[in-house]
Image (cartoon, rainbow, N blue to C red; front, side, top):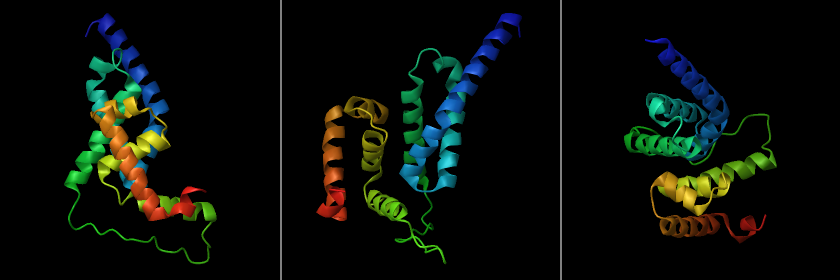
Length: 173
């Protein structure tokens, strides 16, 4: 490898390292909101970063890395959902921790997560990207590779479903 190639690779690797440091918390949080499991969220984040590193020489200067990373993460989430074992058991309620009363904020979080899991995975992605990460309709459409009208329609239906599950009083809080 020639000296200019090494220098370019060094710069590219430094850029990737900086990207990883900046993007990992956001990717892990989004993955958690989609799968509700911190360990799986970490795995999905690592998979996303590995896939991005494999393409890094092609994308590091030309792509919108934030949007690209969200798309790679969502594809990893969708792939994981397709491959999920049929032997996996999901519990409707989280077990209580003995001696520790639940905090109101924790109860709210659990209630929202339980309601979110009832939605189809694409609707979960739309709600998380649109309302948790506060992206525009166009950005969500680009990340999920759908039209903006699909994002609007599915978002409206998903929010309506969440509102019916959580009740009118919950929506006003």
